Length: 123
Image (cartoon, rainbow, N blue to C red; front, top):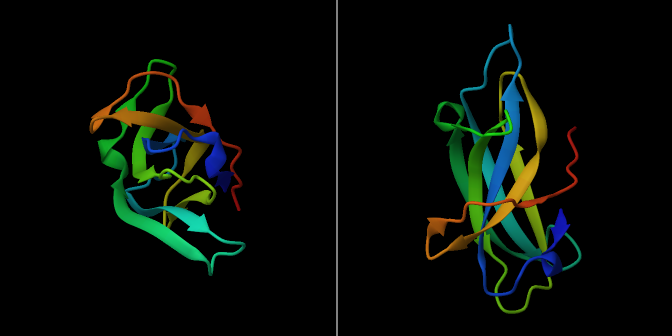
């Protein structure tokens, strides 16, 4: 979870998983990602949720040696007082997570540059 106040209002963002496969272990195939903005004190509050199927075969190689895959897009709106939740569910296989990177998008075209890394929890 990351506070929506760290994002610019009225801006569309993309969330990317930055990771690498582990040699000699099964690679993940697919997973379900959920990107949502929760308004209120708990998960029972109002939310804008976007769910998608992530296919690890569609990942991109980065210049820093890591791989990345799009988890989803979100817009915090004019009043950015909620919390952004990013989850990766039902993933099988093995991989190392570097972090989740958030990048603003320009007119539905991916912005090329450095994003904001969040502190993530891996259970």
